[in-house]
Length: 102
Image (cartoon, rainbow, N blue to C red):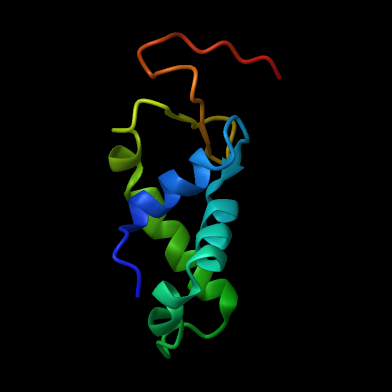
């Protein structure tokens, strides 16, 4: 089992794909796929009736860790319009103004 925290898994995932925007569900599915051994025991918990219920739990855990994620100055998020979007920008920090070019 990996000793990497869930927050670090998310940061690693975003860093590996800079400037690409992901919603929380996409991040949850990606980290479960990248670190399957870390989620195997949790997935086998009988309270998760199916994969959707399991992914919903991971989504809730990620949402609860927003403040920890934003401690990394290169992680950005957009709250509205929903869904919340996260991305990593290696060339900017949160103290710099964001100009949305989309």
